[in-house]
Length: 544
Image (cartoon, rainbow, N blue to C red; front, side):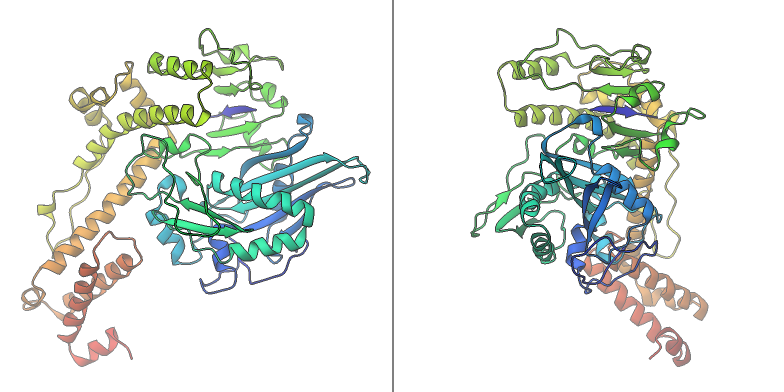
């Protein structure tokens, strides 16, 4: 496996059937509609098979009235089978991410916004991409002309729950390959009874006689520096299978203090609809991470600044004598050795103590979960050391609470000055929490030029603006509204009613971080103000 780094639809309750007709239209549904609970977790389930005449073909989509465009169907077909040269026999699991062809989707009901407002940014629902979780089976079968049974069961979702959905596939796919359609229909009906994803809560998800117990992280959780603990097991029969995480099969979760703001494709092939877009040499490499298995990409994308070549795992426990970064110019042949080939120079020195601990763990056959926990902790602490100075500086741009008065527009958040921030690092930089030496200033300057800084800054600025609006609403609710109204014209009073209503709607939609008591007081203020107006204006503002 090589990693190459460059700089919706809804349905009514339906029955199992073949892939339905193509449509780019996206039907909208209320939460009470059929399959609402199913759709809180999955968009659809697909079965991809190999046809001697057509190649990979979409055999089934469930529910059968879920609409996929031709382009989306083609992408799912190609991404659901390993590259032909891999020759993997038996069962294989992997995942992919693909762009939705119909453009960015609007939340289909308030629960989307509610979930995203409580989930960490790295675990929020994707608005314009699908995740595909694949269970591929390839076994010899003399009854098939080609001599092999080849089929993939694919869960399509907007949630990045790699561990949960792969665990789910390991339960249902073997049963499906034996019993086919009836099994799949029963499983989908069970999923349609699950509670909606709720960050911060332990959920019990029954499927095929097993209860899978999970906890989705919340954005208010404290950062974990040790392996996640198993959820409490309630008095359930059968005893639940507790997943320590819904998403941690990789290390992206360790970077939740800092969202990855570029595109990424865990599995990418030459048949992908964006192949030409990503491999063109007429412009700079795109900001995307591609996971590939076809050696063709090594030559085609050797001009990319980063290429990570991963070899076959060594069971003998052989250890490298030293760890070196290699220049991309050395990556020209198909038999290139595994390693990281990069055109960039690292800004920070490597943590030799960590490397020694990990290599010692390999020698002593330390469990992989423990090794992963060490690596997660290191990356988490390193990222926190990097991001904390940015958070502190960003917080200093927020207006003081005493400057927020009820009857004036709240003051603006001050602009971010890169020079001011870099000057602040001398006394409040990452050196306070991290022992690693290196060019931290150079690392921050490179970060400022990346899409990740723009994504981080936009998210933090949005959160601060909402907090500022919430503080302003609280200031209004704590003021004496009757005193304010004494010398105000009807136009000013009506304007206040409209603004209060707008803030109240936003707050009730979980967009403003305010307490329930504040919402109740705001509603009482609106009623008080309207009651002071002439009857004709009251009728306009409160129509029967």
